[in-house]
Amino acid sequence: METLHPRIRFLWIARGALAAVVLGVVLTAIDQWQFTVPFPAVGGIVTLGLVIGVGYALRRYQVWQFELQDDALYLERGVVTVVETAVPFVRVQHVDTQFGPLERALGLSSVVVYTAGSRNADVRIPGLTPDRARTLQNTLRELAVESEADDAV
Image 1 (spheres, one colour):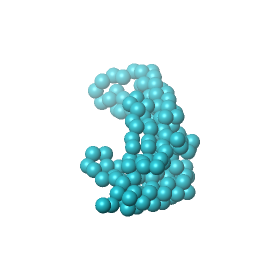
Image 2 (image 1 turned 60 degrees about the vertical axis):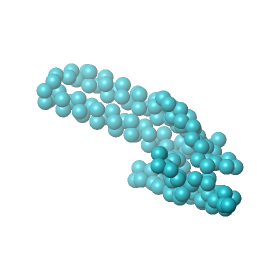
Image 3 (image 1 turned 135 degrees about the vertical axis):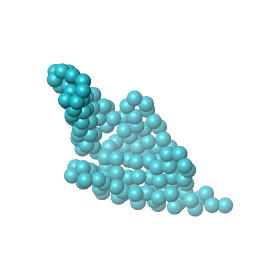
Image 4 (image 1 turned 90 degrees about the vertical axis):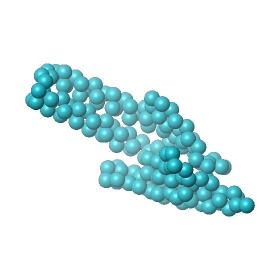
């Protein structure tokens, strides 16, 4: 099984920290608007949010894995609910490489695999270096084309 690049932890921690700060701003606004929220309570809630966000990001990184096998792409992820996904190559429609501004700043990319079907018809593998993402994209595309030829009648 292959793991994600360690820098993805910084992105996930930053998102958790941003959520904790937004929660603090909302609680402060509520304090100014109608209800009295003691400042130490706001600080405690924000601190708790930061601790939970950092812990969640670190655990998420530990459990996120993927593997290319003979017939499918296998993924394992999830902190509270563990999700194991198998994407048969014959179901792959197309594969994209994506990277937002924060991912670019960290030197990371994501591979998105779009599959046939209507429910959760895409799978995203975050936290890859751009070179690894392009290599994985090309490999998945080749395996999808090969499996399509093998599946033909």
